[in-house]
Length: 48
Image (cartoon, rainbow, N blue to C red):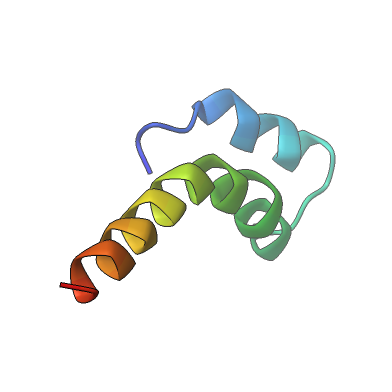
């Protein structure tokens, strides 16, 4: 998750976000594009 700016995690901590909330509100949105592209590639290559 090195592509996510560490200051976003710090801001979430300052705002009182738990580790769980940091995961769902900082990390997942930050990697969503990568996940969607990977899954799209998997689906495209499954078809033949």
